[in-house]
Image: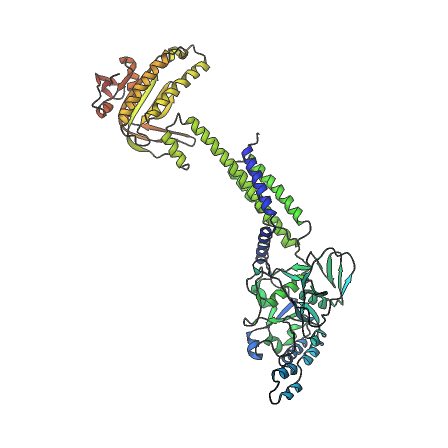
Length: 625
């Protein structure tokens, strides 16, 4: 089967264009991340049950006062929570700086006022809070800062056991860390989260660099404490805390698997309820954080545009605990390119070999397959392959090839139309071209002038002619006849053997159609006489013509690909009978009474009454030469 170059050329152009666009990193990454976000949101599940969020909600704020609470109050809260026996107690809000209700802060605030010396004798809330933290495996949140750390930051303990590979962790000049006396009694975990395109939080850090100090992310610190690991093991491109192991990736972070926000109540308890019954925390990884709208920090995620940061951290902890990392592997780019090229070749083949509808279905199926495969690997295996760029490449390639085929088909149709316009009425062709969906022209009753022709002596003169010469003569004859018909505004209804059936005033109005039809008949008669005088035409050409004016029903007759725009009515049949009568009366043109009535000023020759089949006696006239 020959390959049509147009769809191939268009398809390859579409492939090249889509490939070039896929090489632009910013739009590619934006589309990829948005698609992966949507996939994660649609497949978000309920929490696993290991993590419990203790929510400092509006009720707690109303009970204990606005945030931040005095450290003495925090000490009471932590001590009460510790009684429940949590496996890990992680406090997300950063308890930096001195206690606002402590002696140092109040002494500075009350300096110069009577009784200020008494402020220095107030109890320091940091002391009982540090003591409470010492009674439970605790983590305190710290955040990245553009300023150097005001005091030394405890570094994460790292044991390097193998090759690490190139890695560039999140970096900052320093940390906003808990007050030193508190930091000494707990493990630090960085709670900072980056907003990416659209401000969406997608990743949490495993390690960060605060100046020259490596510090664990909040979720990794929670995993380390729960696993009872004294150090983090670094090697073979991964970071491990006990049995929890996570590939480092190029930036030492990991993608968070969001849980369904509708299920957060399953892993969340208000602080007041836990203070009443701390046993609810037994064996849990407990995250304490703000959810009160007036104080909480809300971040958009893949699953919701508004998530309290403590819930985002809880999702990060659950992602690490699941052992199902979501990472973009080093081979992702090659895999995506191979998938795109393979499926693009398939849809290009379909566009070249199949009709338009099956080719379009194949293109859509291949596009769906590219996206589905990438999303399946992402959701089931954690490989963050691009579900958009390869699919768009396949779609653009297939649609471009199909478009090229359609354009080529239309060009072919235009050439065929140009070839057959000499046989069809230009008005009908234009009407069909303007409305391609018009398969069947509706019938209508209108006055027409019918003109029927027949070659004189055709049977006798063509009996001995070779077929190729006969066809050549007829081609020349009908070419000249059709030119005259179109020149006078007529429509060639059909050719039947050596005869032509011509209509005037159909399908569109033709003012003065009786006169134009008569003028056309005279021109055809003169043309036929001259044609017969040419020796190469074997004496063929003299034409007998019958012509009549009257009402007729015109429109398409037939079905499917066998549609014939034609006319039916007495005037049509009478024109045919008049053409046959030309032989008996030895006249080149005979006209019926309808035409004569329409052209009373013509010098008609009255030939009397002639009985015609199906009509009886009919008044016959011949026009003046």
